Amino acid sequence: ILNVEQSPQSLHVQEGDSTNFTCSFPSSNFYALHWYRWETAKSPEALFVMTLNGDEKKKGRISATLNTKEGYSYLYIKGSQPEDSATYLCAPENNNAGNMLTFGGGTRLMVKP
Amino acid sequence: GAVVSQHPSRVICKSGTSVKIECRSLDFQATTMFWYRQFPKQSLMLMATSNEGSKATYEQGVEKDKFLINHASLTLSTLTVTSAHPEDSSFYICSATATTGGLYEQYFGPGTRLTVT
Image (tube, rainbow over all chains, first blue to last red):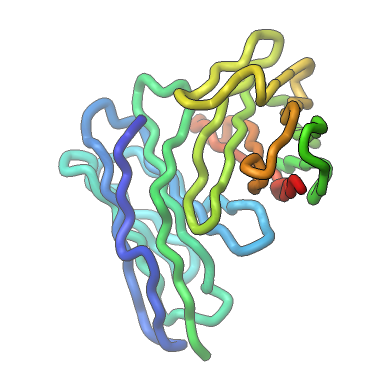
């Protein structure tokens, strides 16, 4: 089981603010890093799958970067909106895992209108 | 896109009874499905990996005789909570893997809220 840490655990921001949070994971045997967005009472929604060191992916106002050598990824949200309120989960996958994901504790984001 | 369903979405049962939860991949075949459990205010904890046609692989600390997993076809995996107790009350969610752009991605079901009284 991988040691995956996400920070902060929770975050309150005002509408329009930009924000970011961190996922830390072991860098050894790295294969891929997944980010999910999980709203209450819904299925976790896949945001990004990242594999290459230095990779940067973007979907609308949300983007993510990856550093596989030091074992971290940042998720950025630009101009937060109330509908961005959710728990953001990261899950690294290593070479020996057989597609098994280990989830971090998540960052719970609340955007106030 | 890949869709995974779970049934039931909510179930309340009495202590000592067994409950079966179904996980189906609706528009793709899933060789591997995963079962997770979420404790209140915590993240998803992997319980077991279910491979079609073979025995499930359970994570440390998960009782295989209590949480029976059957993956009889490429589109269906079931989790049976046997002799349920109040401490088994939790949110159970499954996922199925599919290949998208050469990478494996997990698609999650909507989850099942189990309450044992």
